[in-house]
Length: 206
Ligand SMILES: Nc1nc2c(ncn2[C@@H]2O[C@H](COP(=O)(O)OP(=O)(O)O)[C@@H](O)[C@H]2O)c(=O)[nH]1
Ligand SMILES: Nc1ncnc2c1ncn2[C@@H]1O[C@H](COP(=O)(O)OP(=O)(O)O)[C@@H](O)[C@H]1O
Image (tube, rainbow, N blue to C red):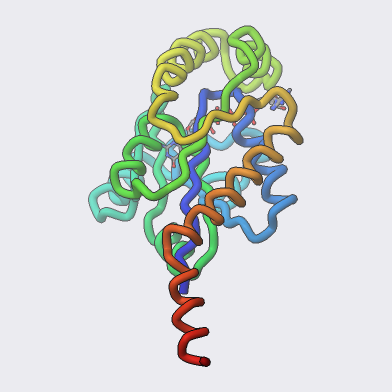
């Protein structure tokens, strides 16, 4: 059985990762979405187990201690982490999985899964990024300023990624990501030498 693709979608807060992921989930129902654990408090409308697994600091620490997380990072005062088992089981079952995580975590995943596909979602401009965070209305002014300074540092790490996708338009960004996924599958077909297996089967028949 061929393993699925591990796709990491990263990028600064407010760039549209969540929005792009929810559109992708609708368009590509076969793509599995990893639900993270966090110590952040739920926002209005967020559901435990759907948007995040909401944990206390103690519960999160237990997950770290028992090696239940593939990676974790502290981001603007809260912890976020990817439950390991779900990712590994999904990949083993041959399905593709997408992790929507911030940059420090993405770089840790890259150390463990260099064969993953690392995509950085870029804002059309920093002004547009600030407007999107403000427009979402979920953060205080201090938190927005903090997220903007973290964003500038994160964009500086773009070179560690395989692809940059600009989120100028949601549909266009999703289309680009879908194209990347298709291309990566084709690339792996070549690397995995399926052609050799095909030749072997046809020699056996002759
Ligand atoms: N390292 C890591 N980052 C995560 C994880 N889950 C979410 N994040 C990131 O944490 C950051 C803050 O997430 P959140 O508080 O939901 O705010 P928002 O994504 O900016 O709306 C975002 O960049 C998320 O992509 C995770 O499991 N691990
Ligand atoms: N291509 C886009 N054009 C305009 N607004 C967008 C676009 N993508 C996302 N947004 C808006 O930007 C805000 C932040 O998006 P969100 O998905 O919450 O970002 P992230 O998950 O990266 O923090 C939301 O209000 C969302 O509706």
